[in-house]
Image (cartoon, rainbow, N blue to C red; front, side):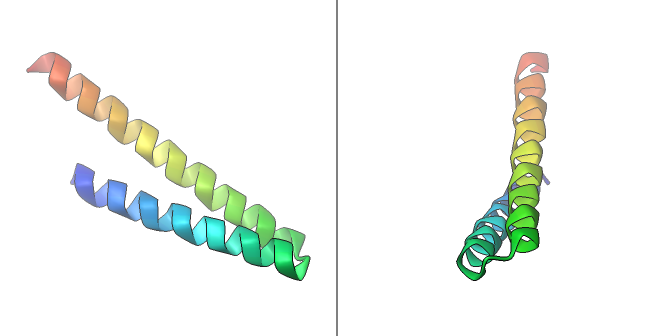
Length: 60
């Protein structure tokens, strides 16, 4: 399941980057902010998954 969450987070990060660029190009601050939020959520998911992986390694 960890790999699934990482893929989902990567997709969300890409969506966020695209939305942020579109918001910047169109001058829409809401799109830009939403894109940044998606990127932050994706980073948080990656961080949680990294911590889980390190805990599993430590317990093995």
